[in-house]
Image 1 (cartoon, rainbow, N blue to C red):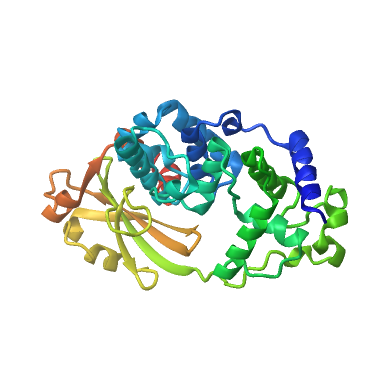
Image 2 (spheres, helix red, strand yellow):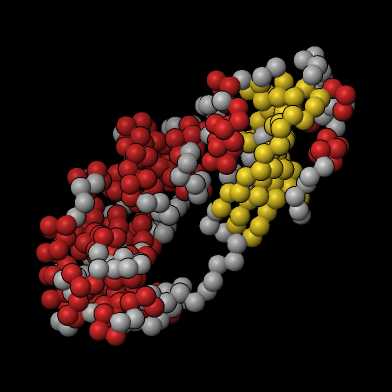
Length: 354
């Protein structure tokens, strides 16, 4: 297949099939960057309202740079991968302080910024600054691996270099950002991971995987992800209808978010006495556990099996252990709504508290 035929056919398809998305109405690098960070590990339709919220609240990168991290995490709540939000804030502050609020224009400079990897750097450089640099995401890997029947592992260094070289040979000199968006869109709408509609595909006469009927085997990713199982035990401490929350500060999942008092165990705790004995917050006669709920929460690299123990303090004048006053505090329901929280905690609150 002639490479020019592929490029011309792809752009023709894109001109009539592309979705109308808010970030496609601009080449502003701030908005392109914002959309790309939000869409990492996120479906487009899920990401749109977040993008619109951020643009409305922070119309310029200067607004984002001076924002409070807690507000950014609160707006991000539900998207997961909260390190993206923290790096978003860090990157905004750096661009304002080091580049006067103006985005660097080259791929080589962009990739050095916090939270910006090869894909995001290529997207910004090509779409906003017309640099001829290819993007590689899951959609692009899938389209190229099927079209040319590439049997290289996309998770390997060798495989990524091969695909990058292949994508670079296809990208056009004129408007490379259009090409990058076109091939990603083609993978998202036409060359689907499962059950692609190959019979109606404009490239099927030149697609080697279609000819060999091995589309389901492309792309190749040999490394299997083994998810770690963790057991979280949450004490939902209730005093006068206010609830104890603490901010997560360790380098673990959900850093910067708020959750209940937590201790992790090697297995599930089932004995309420063990739960009560775990902390020296109060005497047993001053509290009672009146509900226990279990949840399963799946993340990319781990599975959280959480048990929530709702503990009500009987004595409103009970003195709280100093450790707890230092680590966190009690919040009324109105203030809890304003705290950035993991989806798991938010789900429990909506089902059991609010």
